Image (cartoon, rainbow, N blue to C red):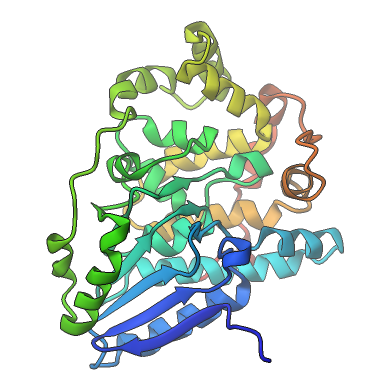
Length: 347
């Protein structure tokens, strides 16, 4: 018996359909999946029979829990840094293609949506979440930075909210995802299949209006002013001081401070810089190029391999970061984001 494909690509009615099909791995995105999706999108872009593209996922838990990090870890530990660089380069090119796609691109981010899942979902023209959505950019915790164009979304989030989310990896539900710019519409999970059928029949993405619901009020908006005060400026050391001063048992400031202290100091410093820069970018491609400079170096000069080991391989949750403190990491952040010359990302 042949193995099931990692991604199911087909035409159905007026729609081009892409279904991530690794439910056992929470639909983590492999290099081959990224290339297959890109290939389909390029063909459908010029196919008059395809009016729109629908991206969803198999299984009950996840849309996409990120890139296949364990594969990148294995190659990196074997000394093959080029494998990861090829993956990230091709993945980021796909993210840019999605962001600029000429036809409606409908992403159903139903369930867990992390990292690479944001990259294939949150740059589309029609971004849908459900009551089951849990979206986050938790990269600092494994020695990365918010990537796949996530820094662009974070940089354009309301106030200082993007920096808060990028540094802490806080999980968002539907309302938070819409509020911060990762999604456009809430559609109840039970209505997705009917909506997809309508898309396939009509080829009209505006049919979303027949299925969408008003998002329930979350608490993120209520703390926006406090977030703006805590994360003003570009010095995470100062951010931590403000969070500590406002911390009380179980409040968001205490949780944020704990998350930042658990993260890679180098990643925190670099994330602060890339989100600040991304706020001034007009195109996601600029953010992707900046992110690529970091990931190109992350295995041999950063904390990626140690972060993945501690969180996903040995699961001891006790990473030994290269830098003992944010202050110590500050001097190396600029070098991690320096231009790559001939190795710069080409989109």
